[in-house]
Image 1 (cartoon, rainbow, N blue to C red):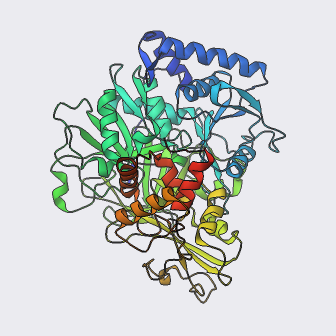
Image 2 (tube, rainbow, N blue to C red):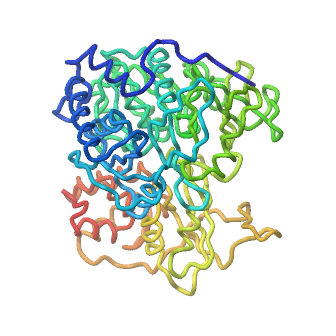
Image 3 (tube, rainbow, N blue to C red):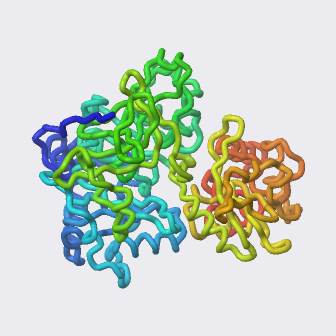
Length: 585
């Protein structure tokens, strides 16, 4: 299958910040960002970004310089990104919840010399080893503006993050297509829900801001529990929003008022398994990868399409996109047959910074178009149905997604093996009885050490939260193939009798006992101690919401969602709260 479309012909400026500047000139007094009770107009946004850009230039910012932005999800983050572009630089959004070692790796790989942090403070990064981080990227295709706009990170096969250089052309193409496809107008208001370091936030930000629409900046708690998210969307008057698949599926099941201001919800990040029914808004299922400037296919889900018994398709290519379903010899497969999805077209990422080998492996010459054009091989197996829509089948290899984030199993295994006392390790994604995918770590350990929570802590210091196993299984040895590789097909299901658990520790104080009791109630188990991992015993994000609600209602303890997600055991939750980093209120 090949599907192609012409790039947009709007006659608008080619760079993202020029489109935002154009919106500021046309609608200077319209709200651009709404953050709590604070409203920032387009005029104010443009002026503050211009002032910061001049300061960046005075501090040494130069064309194509990579500049980090570590401000959290806020108006400040948007101001900083625009300022970087106005100064001629390349924006490197950094998630604020990553371990310091992970952030240090990102700064090194991207060659970041300046960074903008909270309060729009500018700091210098000491001695980055890469002087010209963009120099090793392949040239843009003939006739295409290949200016790199930003760098987002995905997992690397060796445990190091991969830095993807995305272009202004890709962001502009996606934004202008979205304006037309979703009828986005200045009167609209969207929600910003994703972490700034997650590539989907690029779609959340620059699509509305290039249309003169407003963005409501979400609070942390509003993006995790479906009832709270619904209430926040309604309270903010959001008319369209992008929600990752796992949360969107749960959002479909909560009651919605008939006069809901939300008219469109876009979902993506994983295979959508639930058909939306009886909702007062339209649902669009999308497919995209960071290396292809994110969204590249989309499908409007009609109310009657789910009767076929098939899972929702990811639709057809957006404007400016070429899609091919090919076999191992890069030859097209017939419609209805399974092949690997290859993506090309306007704004394909330039490649991986500092990794020409991986760039050459994943960005291959386009056998159907010349002029230096390339295709990105996604590693996803798909088929095309009788209506010309793409259906996702599965990943080609062990490079799956959990919570909408691609997980590199090799990186997880490297972190497990780096834990003291671990002599063998494997990682796998498991799905049990229709549940969402769960990351499982398999360990061979010396004697009785380490304790399970010590392993989790060690992994959490090296990797982002989505790559920390939710359950550990202890084995006497790993099952191997004759080649010596791990036989993943023989890794056991993480049943309760083989889950790696330490000695059941009793509570140190009344608060810790209260957390243990709530864990027991939510999980329906009586054998839970202070060191037991909530997710390892079958807990999920819905359970986290129940834990938080029960602690608040029964004991008057207000624990942030993020604390439960990150700390996971009663002992670590209470310790983190006692340290004051994430103190219950």
